Each structure stands twice: as C-alpha cells, then as structure tokens.
Image (cartoon, helix red, strand yellow):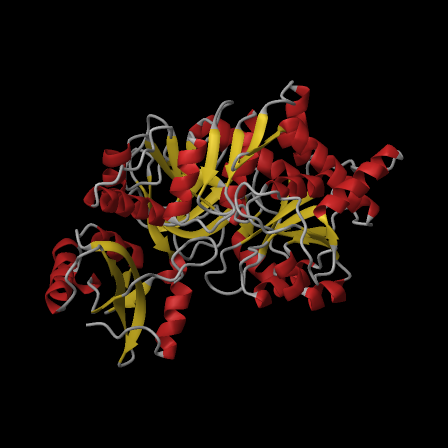
Amino acid sequence: MSDVRNLADYFLFDRLAEGLSETPALLFGERRQTYGEVANATTELAAHLYGAGITAEARVLIALPDTPAYAAAFFATLRIGAVVAMGNPHAPAEDLAHLVRYTRAQAVITTPAVALAIAAETKDAGSHVVLVQDVATGEDWLSTEPSQARGTWLGAALDDGRARIAKGQASRRETQRDDPAIWLFTSGSTGRSRAAMHTHRDFAFNTEHYALGTVGYRRGDITVSVPRLFFGYATGTNLMFPFRVGATAAFFSERPTPDALIKAIDAYRPTIVTNVPTMMGKLLEDDDARALRGAPRLDLSSVRFHLSAGEALPPALLERFLARFGGEVYDGIGSAEMFHIYCSNRPGDVLPGSLGRVVEGYELRILPLDADGAGAPPCAVGESGVMWVRGDSVALGYFQDRDKSWETFHGHWCRTGDLFHVDANGYYWFEGRADELLKVGGVWVAPLEVENCLSEHTAVAAVAVIGVEHDGLTKPKAFIVTKADTAVGEALVDELKTWVKARLSKHKYPRTIAFVDELPKNDRGKIDRKELKRRELAGENPEGR
C-alpha cells in the first residue's frame, strides 16, 4: 500500500471521489449519516482541533461509546496528522487517568462523566477537551446538557471548525505512510496495557489482505459489532473495513448484552456481525429460552457471516450455532501488535476447531519456546510451539517499553506468545498462551485444552481454568458456568472430572471445580484469568470441590 499517505483519505475521503457522497455510511437507530455528512463532520472537527493547537503526531485520546461521534473523532485526528489513542469510556477512572498520563494526550474527546472523572489529569496535561453527550441509540449525539465538566461541546467544536474553514484556515496536514497514526493497546493480560505504535500503512495493508482479500467485505454490506469501537478488533471490522468498500456501519451505544445485540440485528438486518464466542453461546441460550416460552425465535437470516476472535471458539459451540442460525463463522487470530487478523478461516475454507490458514501477505512460523529469533529451526508438523508472524502491519514497538519491544518485535517479525501447532495441510491450531502454561506433575498443561474438553459437556455453558497452589504444587482449577436448569452437586463434579480423564491425559483433569454465575471479563470481552488469579490469591473465589 505504498500510495496510502493518510488513513482518513483511504477510508473516508476516497469514497467521495468514488461518487459515494450520498451513500449511507453510518446507521444509529433511526438516524443515518451519508459518507458526505461524515466527511463534513470530520473536516469541521479537524479544523477545530488544528485551530486548538493540536500538533502533528500528538496523541488524541478518544474515550466514547459507539455513536457517530466516534467516526468524526477518529478520522479528524488522522486528518490533522495526530495519533489516535482509544480508551474504554466505562473503564475505572484510574485506568482512564493512566491513559491520559501515559499518552500525554494533547486532546481528549469523551463524555462529560469521563471528563469529570479525569479532570485533574487533563488539567495537568493541558489537554484540550471535547465533550460528547452519552446518548442512547437513536438519540441526538450532538445534544448538550448542563455539566460541570470542562471542555468544548462537540456541536460548538463543529461550528468553530466550520467558521475556521470559511476563513481559509487549515483542516488537514500532509502525512506520509510511515508517520505514526494509531496506538493500539494490548489486552493487559499480564499487567497494564501497553501501546503498540502503528503507522498509516499498517492498517491499509491488513484491510486489503484480510478484509477484502480473505473474508470479502463488499459494497452493500451492513456491519454490526459486539466488541466496542475502542477495541482494535471492532475498530477494524465495524468502522475501517466497511468504510473502505463503501458499505454501511451500524452502531448501538448500549452495553453489548444479548438483548442489545438482538435489537440491533432486528433493526439493522446486518450482513456481517463481529462476534465473540461468549456472545454466540448467549444467543443460543436466549433462543432456547424463547422457544420454551413460546416466543418467536431469533432471526439471523440476514447475516452472511460472523467474525470470531479474541477467545477460543469450541467446535461444539460452532456446530450448534451454525445448525440453529445458518450462515458462516470465520474464526481467526490477530493482535494489537499486528493490528488485526493474520490467520483465519474464510469463505469455502472452514475447519472447525482450527484458526484456519495464513492470510495472504503474511508469513507464519511455529518456533520452539526458547527461540530467540525468527531464523530458529521451526517445530515439526503437529508439534507445539510459539507462533511468529511477519507482515507489513507490524507495529514499530511498544511506547516506553524497549525491553518488551525487544522480546516481541524482531524487525519484520513479531513473536506473538501464542502456542500453536500447524498440521500437514497448513491449518493452525491454537493451544493457549505460552505465559499461561501450567506445570502439573512435571508436565506442561495448556488451560485451553482442558477448557475445550469441558466445554463439550452438555452441562457447561462457559469455563475458565487457572493454576492454583496446593501444598506448594500447581493444580488445575476449573470455574464453570452451567446451562440453565442444570443440577449442581458432587455428582456433576465427579462426572466432569471423569469426562476430562477419559479424553485427555489423566494429569490434565481439574483437581477442583467451582460453579459460578458468571466469569469475569476484561474490557475486550475476554475471560479475565488475571482477575480469577487475583481473586484466588485474595480468597474471593469459591473453593470448589
């Protein structure tokens, strides 16, 4: 993508040149924005930020719910050559305050509630604050209400930008393909999130090879996402990718519960849904509950395909989901370090349980745990090792963490830390994280293998496995959410342990099983094993049997 100089052009303004000014770009309840209207809002906000003194390569922290304001903030930041950093508006105040300090944000675009919570940090940083009303889906995202938060309301910012443009003042900067564009934050599974620093070319490269070349986004698609836009997985699938092809992105601002997602699907009739395995399971449960009470069952017939990533998709869940709802599910793996997905199932080529084959334009290697470079001899076919990936979307490194950067980035190559094996046909099979392996009785155990085994039992709705200490030894402990109307007791505990023993090596079975109402999730919707471990150390987890 040598000709891509600015992502605002690549994803948005090039659509105007293609004659798509009147094509619907965004849906928000009954409200609709065309590509021309998104471009106008972007240009006006860009002029305002430029006039407010936001400099080239400065960080702009966007902490917003999924409303049309997100698109304007995202593309306006890129248009003036600043750097997008994204935060969860519902994260704890201290986490958001940390992001202001860490990014040294020259501007923060957020809701009044967040602005109040981080007021001390934005004042210390001298951040220019733009306020956006936190509205329900379909409400006026340019509305204002009395607030003690310091900042300029988005509507006033757009008015200011419009006046500046009328006076001939600047609303964009020239950028190059290797200028910094977006910081993507890691999930923080082993500590605080760190920023992987990406340039403009990175996002165009993956968009062409994955979104267009592999799964096949096309004009006329309507997209909906379970993960929120601050997560790079969704920023790609529900903003960048549809905009690249002149499709329509549909937003809903509420927390992504099954009810909220079902309402969005009924309203928008999407052709592509960015999903996660946990939500897929909840949709099946909701559909079963509807059937029991005689209500109409869920209608997902508009969906061409679902995307799945972020956590393992058990084959049993995939089989049930496809049998009930039809369509296709393309499970894949990507990372903040590579922007998006580089190994995936795809149309006409889905192997349940695997994460598919390498995306064209990328190269994958499975190397031993102790490999210190991409040139190490690879593992044999079928042998477990760490996945290394090479491609033009690789990040420059982590901000303020050279030691971790040296461990992860090796020139064109990235050491992912994910355990895989590849079969003789080139399909890749995920085996968990290298840093989550448990040594049980002197033998390495991958929690994911135990979780997948347990998830195939008819009583199990969701499961997570961690290592706990007993008399100085590490033993697997399973936390299980059972399906509705399941009898929980010693008999089920014994049955589940026997289930694992019969299917895996005997040392891999969970020595303890605890039944819980739900599993903790991080802000990306993944099961939060770090939180489970913290609770275990603090004595807050149920003891189990």
